[in-house]
Length: 429
Figure 1 (cartoon, rainbow, N blue to C red):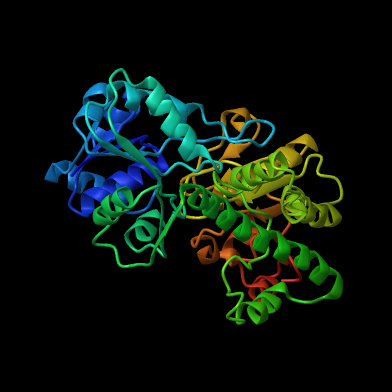
Figure 2 (cartoon, rainbow, N blue to C red):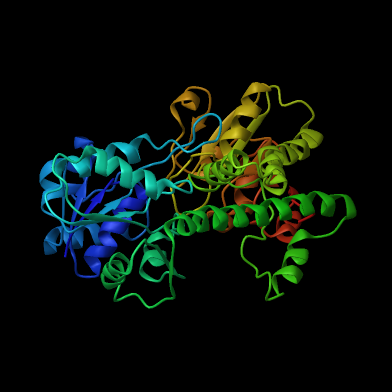
């Protein structure tokens, strides 16, 4: 089968390359000519470990190519994956303009049967709308099926997740469409759940909302642990050993970010509100997450007093390690708050860059050692594995005050204290 993946962002490029690795002939389609040219040269427009090597491999093997010719790409294919962005509107609803746009393109250019697979994260009922958009755009009637096939990729672990998925969810209206997609995934060894398109769409939102709930729950517990002089890491260990709960996403910190959890939880809330259902628990999940960074800043403020004229070194920009994604990153909220209160801010991240609005206000440093020079406080915001490996004994000599505030409970509290640092984590660590 020939496959076209529409959208060459994080999900689309990963999907295209994994399908090529599975032996299929794949075309990546994007209207952005600069992005297409970059991919043709073997370079990714984002950072994801292991993916660029796979890109070079399959450009050379000929199993993947990239184009911005929508008409030809649609006509030459059997299966079309929709992997375009669905950002949030200001009110929290998902913006489906890109999904609608590509659906209309598919309808306009299709010349025989197509299986359309929607991987974009979309509200319940979108499969029906995609079907309608395609049908309305057709110049000549052709049969097609639209299947919901949500992705569950973790940024920084996308390649591993795509090659070794926990499950594959296929939401289809008929057996022919579901079997066709199952045949595409024949080499993957995991449970396959066949369900309705609406159910598949809800599974994606429900999964992300549940994971976000675990994070906010632990962050609320961490505040209580601070008051009770209890180590939240030990609480998390005790909870996580319960097989009904599990250890994942029980790490207290400064909140979740990225492209998925914030918008997906908001979109699920909007869906519930439209249908007269109140998801009050998720409302609190969002509220806790939006305020969580303030808990760490209160710790810093208690130690330093005013931020005016003080230098803060922020370690980590990305919302999580092993990615350059800064969307909804808690570090950005912390940096903006520090700048608003008159602090001098230096920043380091191994791969992520400052957004344009902070480029002139904060200083992006080439190394963590450089960022710490003259610092009154270190604020660790991303749990990059390189940060515990710093020579903390040596870098202390370059700091103005040896204060470390660990927003991810990454460092060894006893070791940092023994080295002469004032150390504070989240939840008495």
